[in-house]
Amino acid sequence: DLVGYAWAGFGSAFGPVLLLAVFWKRMTWTGALAGMIAGAGTAIVWDIVDSSYLGIGLFSMVPGVIVGFVAIFALNSLGKVSDVMESDFDRVEREVKAVRSESVAEEVAG
Image 1 (cartoon, rainbow, N blue to C red):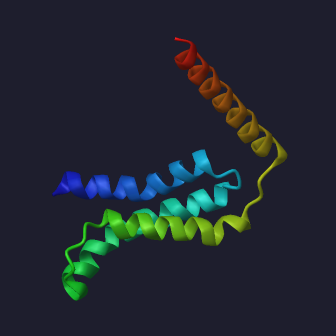
Image 2: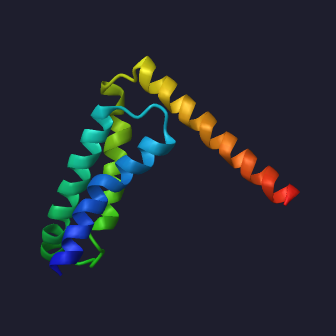
């Protein structure tokens, strides 16, 4: 139970942040912090609320991840995406596309 509880906390805190940091250009540190706090807090509180009031039996990571995503989107605009962050994201995106196109060309030729 303790290991499941720990994984739910870590997954709820860092899962949404990592996914959006990789795939969303507009992610800010404010949104990341909000998502980590809200996701982890929900995972911690969910078991207590569920066992005392709801009785659903839903694994705490599920609502934790949902609340983490909602918090990121709701509070992300309080931070600012710098020009350096945006240019780094664009550069990495171009590099990934270049590697993918080279890989496809090698498979076709190969």
